[in-house]
Structure formats: C-alpha cells, structure tokens
Amino acid sequence: MAQPQDISTTVLGADEIILNMGPQHPATHGVLRVKLKLDGEKVIGSECIIGYLHRGVEKIGENRSYPQFAPYVDRTDYVAAVSNGLGYCEAVERLLGVEAPPRARWVRTILTELQRIASHLLWLGTHALDIGAITPVFYTFREREEILKIFEKYCGARLTTHAFRIGGLQYETYDGFEEDVKKFCRDFEEKVDEYGELLTENRIWVERTRNVGILTAQDAIDLGVTGPVLRGSGVRWDIRKAFPYAAYAQFEFDIPIGERGDTYDRYLVRMEEMRQARRIILQAVDSIPEGPILARVGKVIKPPPGEVYHSIEAPKGELGYYIVSDGTIQPYRLRIRPPSFINLEAFDKMVRGHLVADVVAIIGTLDIVLGEVDR
Amino acid sequence: MTDEQKKEEQKPASPEAAKPAAVAAKPPAKPAGPAPEPLDNEQVRRLRARFAATIGEATLDRKQAIVVVARERLRDICQYLRDEEKFDFLTDLTAVDWYDRSPRFHVVLNLYSFARNERLRLKVPVADSCPSVSGLWSTANWLERECFDMFGIVFEGHPSLKRILLPDEWKGHPLRKDYDILKQDTDWVRENLGIESGQ
Image (cartoon, rainbow over all chains, first blue to last red; front, side, top):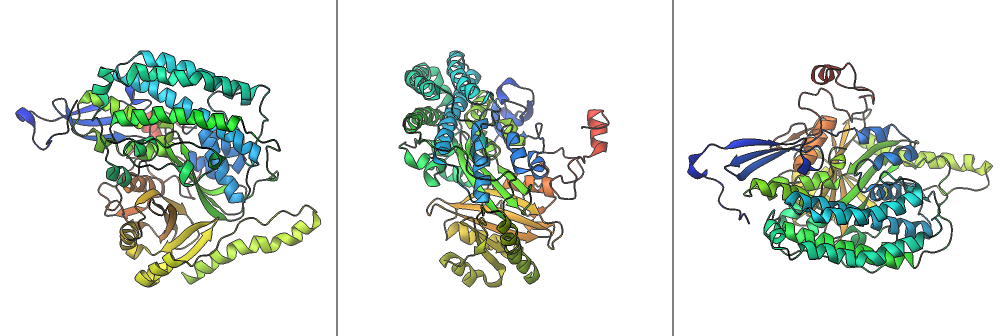
C-alpha cells in the first residue's frame, strides 16, 4: 500500500503535526503511548513512550527467594505465562547445576508449545481486528479457550499459571491429559487452515500487510529483534535449534522464515509456527517417558556463587534470564531480557514513511505485551 | 584491580571448601555444584594479543564464556568482536551493582554470533560512566537508556540518554543496591498522583 518514499520534504509546504496515540488506545494492546510526527497522513518520525506498567519486577526479584519469585515472571508476558516460567526455572536449574527429569522436560515442552499456539492465536485475532477483519478473533479465541482449559485442568490457573517448579514439575499430569492434548491437536489442524482461508488470500488483508513495515535481515540483526520478527526478515534462527532446551532436541520441526520482512511475511511465519508447534506437541505427547517429575533440588534453593544467562524461544522472541548469585537464597541480580521491549525498538524504523492507518498494523505485527516491555 | 580479581577467584572456592565438613554429618552428600573456572582459548588469546592489558580475567561459568574488559577501549573491542570475530548480535546489555567494590558497577554485554552459534559475555567495570556502543548496535540505544534509568550509569556518546521506564522527573535509580525496595520518589508521587504513598 504505502511505499516508503523520500520523506525529507513536506508535501504542499504544510506544517508537520505531532499526533499522540495512547496510552489508552484499543490498538496499542495495553498502555503504549506513541508520539507520531506527521506530514499529512504520512509518518515521518515516531517516539514510543513506555513505562506505564513498570512494576520493578527485577527489583522484586532481588528481594525474594528463588522459588518465591517464580510466580512473578508469569506477570511479565502475561499472555504466555508458561513460557516465562520455563525460562526462569531452567535458568535457576542451570545456576544450581541440576537438570529436570525427562518426564518433566517432556511435559514442559508440551505445555510451552500449547502456550505458543495460545499466544499466537491471541496475536492473530487482535492483529486482524486492528486491521479491520473482525471475524478471526472469534475463531481464535474459541481455540485458545481449549488450551486454557487444559492449563486449568493441569494446574488450576488459566493465565498466570505458575505451571513449573525449579527442578521439574509440581503436579503430575491429570488423567486424560494426553487425550485432551491429542484431541486439541486433531481439531486444530483444520482450524489453522480455516484462519488461513479467511486471511491469506484475502485481498484486503494482503493489501494492508504486504510491504508494510519492512525490516531487512541486516536491520533486524542490528536492532536486536528476535523471534518471528527476526525470522520474518529471513534469518533462520530459533533458540530451540541453536541452543536446545527442555526436550526440543528430540523432536523434528521446521523453522519457517519470510522473504521480504514485511507484515504479511511475519503473519505467514506465525501461522506456520502454530502448525510446527502442533507437530512438536504430537511427537511429545506420544513419547512422554515414565519416571519422577522433580529433580533433587533441596528444600532451600541456594545456588553456588556465579552467574548464568539462559534464554528460551518464547512466542515473542528470545526471553532470557541473567541471574547473578552470591550464594544466598536470593538472587543478587536478576535481569530479564524482554523480547517485546527490544522488538518494540524496531518500531520507529518500520513505521517511517507509512500512513497512520499502518501504524496499528505495525504495532500488531511486532506482537508486544506491555507487561513485558515495562516489567 | 588485582585485589578485586583475587576476591572474585576466592569467592567461589570458599563455600565449597567449607562444605565437606557440614555435609559429612548428613549421609546424602550433595554435589558441590557448578563454579567458575579460568578460560583460556584461541579467542581469548587473540583478544589479549590485540588489546593487551585492557583484557582482564576470562572465566568459564556454567559453560558460558565471560571476559572482563576495561572501559577505555570498550568500543574498539566491541568493533573488533563484531566485525572480525563475527559477534554481530547484541543480545542484551545490563548492569550489576557491586556497591562495596571499586569501581562500583559492572556493565554486562551479552554478545551472540550467528556464524559460530556462540555467546560471549563482556563485563566492564565502571564507576559511573561507560562508553556507549549504540553506534555499533542500534539495539543498545534503549538498553543503555534503561541502564541509565535503573542504575544511573552515564553512557558517553549516546544519542539521547534519558529515562525510559520511569518518569523523566523521577529522582533516584531503583536498581542500585542502596535504593530500598520500599523507597520511592515521594515528592513526585505526591505531585503527580496526588497521594501520599504508592504502597
């Protein structure tokens, strides 16, 4: 639609205007405020103002014991709590030098991939809604509900699940867990195609997303973006392959990438990721090993002094935990590397030269969660 | 510097040395757990050959490579690592407050190389300012702003160093160790939120 053109001159000699968008705006997915510098309807500059949801999560981490802090991480990226928990628990396990038992790793993989599908479904529904396609959101929430039901049956919570514990799992899978997961996967295959039928070749959708918010591979690396945004720009990189964690090394799956790095490519990448996640779940659910679900970590978790950086491929990108231990029961320093925060930094680069209407498409395609941006 | 290095080396050793006596009483002896060890590989040697004394201690902690570098040549070292050693991706930039040490802070850069599929962590001891690497990696722009916001470390050469998560007028840097968890800028809260306390 809007081709980036020379933006150095102001058409018709009109004055530039500053438009304020948010922090309360339905299309900013939370409390994001964007200041746009406009020439007519064209964006010639932007500034993101963030921090409205800052709760000092890292400071809280330094003042809680390791297990006490685990529920807090669910509240950073609150639409993918299971993934946050996996990253944190594995980081502390690495700091301790223990590994979760195989059964725990398999169940973790299944739940995390279900969470990836749930997160992408939420993204797809709201992203389409922002652009003007109202139908998909009803379908995607229907399927997301099925995943949340599995979470609820497993650990009693739907959103801020706190599903994992340091060293493995607290809960054994419930009776019928495998059947529920298989049933979801069986039904889900044609559901993804159904969303695709609504959007992939929909002329309005293609017009609104093709060539919008282009990010070249070089820019993507320079800007440090990760996850589907990086892959949409054609960089085949996924932490599940680069540094396998949980049980990912055991399963076969592909890493989809885009060609042009535009909003449409990122849409295709996330759609394919949902299919691949289903593939991983099906392989995992058929091969859950028997055995204990919790490694021996002791009642008091007191990692030896030292530090660790551990990251996982969360639905939004690379979610990393950098923990420095001084040998006490509390972390000396706990840093969360937030994918949404760093991906949002690319917003300015992507939005320049586009129309105001495309701004919501670009915010949507970055798939940010303000709880994680602001922490 | 040398004193500090010694302290770092001794630190992990001492609790383990103390452990066997305590553990001996209880039969299920726990493994001592991972500890940092010195690192000396090709890459570190190349760095040392090129940047001599500005490269400090190199360690391997939990199988992760960590190199301490001096702030004076940080930008040159980063440029070399980015262009010649192919560490083209800045994963994260943050800081740690060692309030009883001198210099007080460690700025921590987490680098990643797509070509080698390797990570490298640089630690830069700084007192209150550090050269900015935002000219090398655009991603450092916001990360350095966050670091400034939370720790008050000034990044020299940063294009627009201002607060990012906290309000611009906020006083204090919350992730410093001498900033209590219940502390806040009460004046700001009273003025802008019209309440006595945010607690």
